[in-house]
Amino acid sequence: MKETSWLAFSIDRSAKTPVFEKICAAIRERAVSGDLPQGTKLPPTRVFATELGVSRSTIVTAYEQLVAEGYLNSR
Image 1 (tube, rainbow, N blue to C red):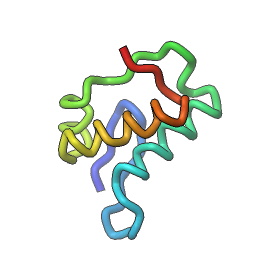
Image 2: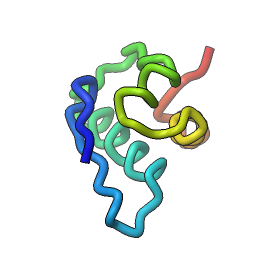
Image 3: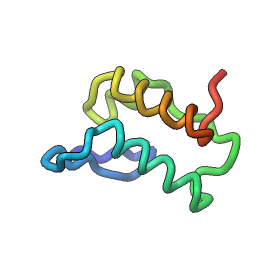
Image 4: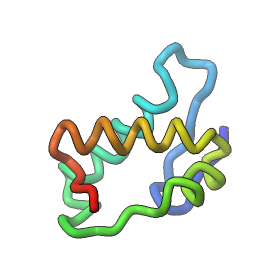
């Protein structure tokens, strides 16, 4: 499990849940709890992917899902 300092969560690769869904859940939880205030700028996909040890497309998919759900805004 690799932990990122930005979100302070670990990815358990032994679970059946897809990694992008775990990332979505972690960001969603922080947004709902107020730990991720509105207007917070998320790290670039390449940086975040490197920190988590996942592919960039995994982060892109997670970000796109959260935009579709209304948790993130894209610019």
